[in-house]
Length: 177
Image (cartoon, rainbow, N blue to C red; front, side):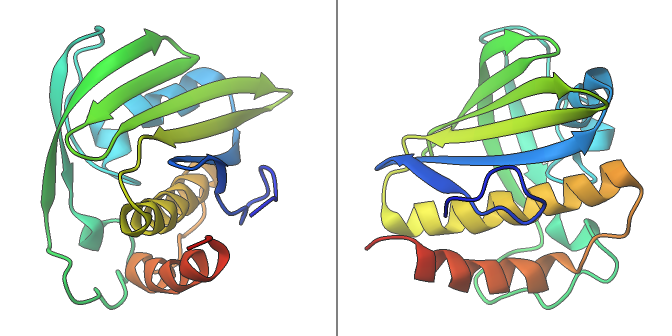
């Protein structure tokens, strides 16, 4: 787990309970920021949910992963068609940084850095409570970011659930026990 910002780069543990994953996206930075903050764009790669752009503001994310790709692939056992999570913005520096806390699974930050005509997105997910959550979060972010990269490049993303299933096995193999 040492590749950096390659299209398929795996997340890396930068601390025992902290995952970092990077992707390069076509700019400009304001376009990538919109994919993070606007519900209609974010729902195409992650989850819907209107955010009030203010530190401390609560919001709800609504995942409907079956809708992210066509076809969606085979949903693994134990996953539902919809998942909701209460969240709260904890840091905001438009269009460079957005961080929010998730109930029960730590804090997520997105940092955007212009690099020529591309934008380096660095995602850091902190305070992962256990290895099982780490594996799910690693494979999940990797898969969702793959969808984001495809959408931002105007390409068709691979079937979400099939990619997630493959990556869950790969993160299990790559992540220390």
